[in-house]
Length: 159
Image 1: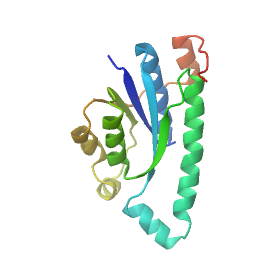
Image 2: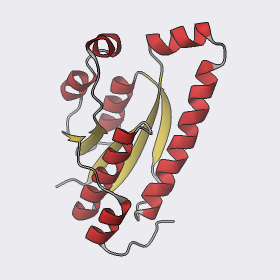
Image 3: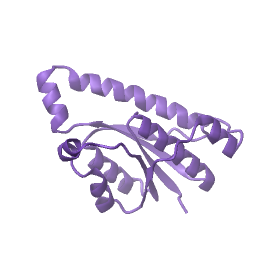
């Protein structure tokens, strides 16, 4: 059913939830997993860079570390290391990647936002729904590592 699963990851608590839930679902279906981490480049980040030189470099460094940690986690879950780190507007980058890898399922986390945050960041969810050709899972289920391994049994880490 789901041959290829795209996990969009940002390192947040919600992103870690999506990573585990998406990985669990992928294990159940025997799917290939692709991890995408997007370093946001939007008006807020550009304003931050203007106010504090080096903010973008720091953001990039943090995301490189988050990406590597997520790749290690997926490898421990038994998946091949497949993914990439990109810079851009998250919704557009996620949708483009989903189309490029021909994902059957896109898994994202959800973080509640205030009205001002929604106005500032735009309609990410609506954009994704309109620009992907696959199913979309908005992960809300908390899955611990222990629960993951209890459900799938022993996993041989991928090389």
